[in-house]
Amino acid sequence: MEQQSNFVPNLTLGYGAFLIAWGIAVSILSDSKSITSYFPSMLGVPLALAGVMVMRMPEKRKLWMHIAATFGLLCAIGGTRFFMVMGDGITYASGSMLMLLVTGSAYTVVCVRSFIAARKAREAAEASA
Image 1 (cartoon, rainbow, N blue to C red):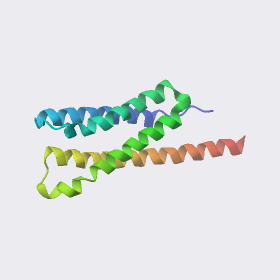
Image 2: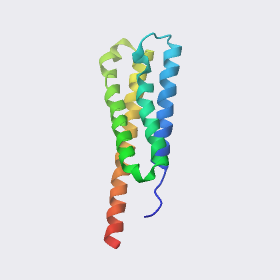
Image 3: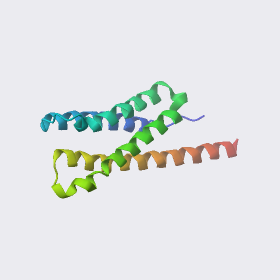
Image 4: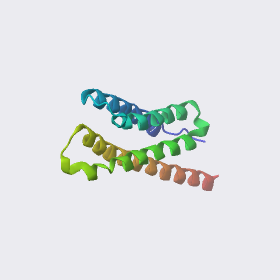
Protein backbone atom coordinates (compact mmCIF):
# COMPACT_ATOMS: atom_id res chain seq x y z
CA MET A 1 0.00 0.00 0.00
CA GLU A 2 1.35 3.40 -0.92
CA GLN A 3 2.22 6.05 1.64
CA GLN A 4 -0.82 8.03 2.80
CA SER A 5 -0.70 11.78 3.22
CA ASN A 6 -0.53 13.13 6.75
CA PHE A 7 -2.17 16.44 5.81
CA VAL A 8 -5.59 15.67 7.33
CA PRO A 9 -4.20 14.07 10.54
CA ASN A 10 -1.89 17.07 10.99
CA LEU A 11 -4.81 19.39 10.28
CA THR A 12 -6.85 17.47 12.87
CA LEU A 13 -4.16 17.86 15.51
CA GLY A 14 -3.76 21.56 14.70
CA TYR A 15 -7.52 22.19 14.68
CA GLY A 16 -7.87 20.42 18.03
CA ALA A 17 -5.04 22.49 19.52
CA PHE A 18 -6.62 25.67 18.12
CA LEU A 19 -9.98 24.83 19.71
CA ILE A 20 -8.35 24.07 23.06
CA ALA A 21 -6.47 27.38 22.99
CA TRP A 22 -9.57 29.28 21.83
CA GLY A 23 -11.73 27.95 24.66
CA ILE A 24 -9.14 28.78 27.28
CA ALA A 25 -8.40 32.23 25.84
CA VAL A 26 -12.05 33.24 25.54
CA SER A 27 -12.78 32.02 29.06
CA ILE A 28 -9.90 34.06 30.46
CA LEU A 29 -10.53 37.17 28.36
CA SER A 30 -14.25 37.24 29.11
CA ASP A 31 -13.69 36.40 32.78
CA SER A 32 -16.41 33.80 32.36
CA LYS A 33 -17.40 31.63 35.28
CA SER A 34 -19.48 29.37 33.02
CA ILE A 35 -18.22 25.94 32.01
CA THR A 36 -19.85 26.44 28.60
CA SER A 37 -17.15 28.96 27.67
CA TYR A 38 -14.81 25.96 27.52
CA PHE A 39 -17.04 24.18 24.96
CA PRO A 40 -14.55 24.69 22.09
CA SER A 41 -11.81 23.20 24.27
CA MET A 42 -14.02 20.22 25.12
CA LEU A 43 -14.42 19.53 21.40
CA GLY A 44 -10.75 20.22 20.73
CA VAL A 45 -9.42 17.56 23.10
CA PRO A 46 -10.88 14.55 21.22
CA LEU A 47 -9.88 16.11 17.89
CA ALA A 48 -6.27 16.56 19.00
CA LEU A 49 -6.29 13.06 20.49
CA ALA A 50 -7.58 11.61 17.21
CA GLY A 51 -4.80 13.40 15.30
CA VAL A 52 -2.18 11.94 17.63
CA MET A 53 -3.69 8.45 17.50
CA VAL A 54 -3.62 8.40 13.68
CA MET A 55 0.11 9.08 13.81
CA ARG A 56 0.74 6.52 16.54
CA MET A 57 -1.51 3.79 15.13
CA PRO A 58 -1.59 4.17 11.33
CA GLU A 59 -3.38 0.82 10.98
CA LYS A 60 -6.38 2.41 12.78
CA ARG A 61 -6.28 5.56 10.63
CA LYS A 62 -9.77 5.08 9.20
CA LEU A 63 -11.34 4.68 12.65
CA TRP A 64 -9.62 7.70 14.19
CA MET A 65 -10.31 9.93 11.21
CA HIS A 66 -14.01 9.03 11.28
CA ILE A 67 -14.08 9.86 14.99
CA ALA A 68 -12.38 13.18 14.22
CA ALA A 69 -14.84 13.95 11.42
CA THR A 70 -17.70 13.29 13.83
CA PHE A 71 -16.30 15.82 16.30
CA GLY A 72 -15.80 18.28 13.45
CA LEU A 73 -19.47 17.88 12.60
CA LEU A 74 -20.35 18.40 16.28
CA CYS A 75 -18.39 21.67 16.14
CA ALA A 76 -20.45 22.82 13.15
CA ILE A 77 -23.72 21.75 14.75
CA GLY A 78 -22.81 23.43 18.04
CA GLY A 79 -22.02 26.60 16.13
CA THR A 80 -25.51 26.80 14.67
CA ARG A 81 -26.64 28.27 17.98
CA PHE A 82 -25.07 31.48 16.68
CA PHE A 83 -28.23 32.09 14.65
CA MET A 84 -30.29 32.12 17.84
CA VAL A 85 -28.14 34.77 19.55
CA MET A 86 -26.87 36.87 16.63
CA GLY A 87 -29.46 39.55 17.32
CA ASP A 88 -27.64 40.34 20.57
CA GLY A 89 -24.51 41.37 18.67
CA ILE A 90 -21.08 39.79 18.64
CA THR A 91 -19.99 38.86 22.14
CA TYR A 92 -17.35 36.39 23.27
CA ALA A 93 -19.97 33.64 23.37
CA SER A 94 -21.54 34.39 19.99
CA GLY A 95 -18.08 34.84 18.46
CA SER A 96 -17.15 31.36 19.68
CA MET A 97 -20.34 29.96 18.21
CA LEU A 98 -19.64 31.59 14.86
CA MET A 99 -16.06 30.33 14.92
CA LEU A 100 -17.29 26.78 15.63
CA LEU A 101 -19.84 27.00 12.81
CA VAL A 102 -17.35 28.22 10.22
CA THR A 103 -14.31 26.14 11.18
CA GLY A 104 -16.30 23.00 12.01
CA SER A 105 -18.07 23.16 8.65
CA ALA A 106 -14.82 23.70 6.76
CA TYR A 107 -13.06 20.90 8.66
CA THR A 108 -15.93 18.49 8.02
CA VAL A 109 -15.85 19.29 4.29
CA VAL A 110 -12.09 18.63 4.18
CA CYS A 111 -12.61 15.29 5.96
CA VAL A 112 -15.40 14.17 3.64
CA ARG A 113 -13.36 15.11 0.56
CA SER A 114 -10.41 13.19 1.99
CA PHE A 115 -12.59 10.12 2.62
CA ILE A 116 -13.89 10.25 -0.96
CA ALA A 117 -10.35 10.57 -2.35
CA ALA A 118 -9.12 7.67 -0.19
CA ARG A 119 -11.97 5.45 -1.36
CA LYS A 120 -11.31 6.29 -5.03
CA ALA A 121 -7.59 5.59 -4.58
CA ARG A 122 -8.32 2.27 -2.89
CA GLU A 123 -10.75 1.24 -5.63
CA ALA A 124 -8.24 2.22 -8.33
CA ALA A 125 -5.51 0.21 -6.61
CA GLU A 126 -7.81 -2.83 -6.36
CA ALA A 127 -8.81 -2.51 -10.02
CA SER A 128 -5.19 -2.40 -11.20
CA ALA A 129 -4.12 -5.33 -9.03
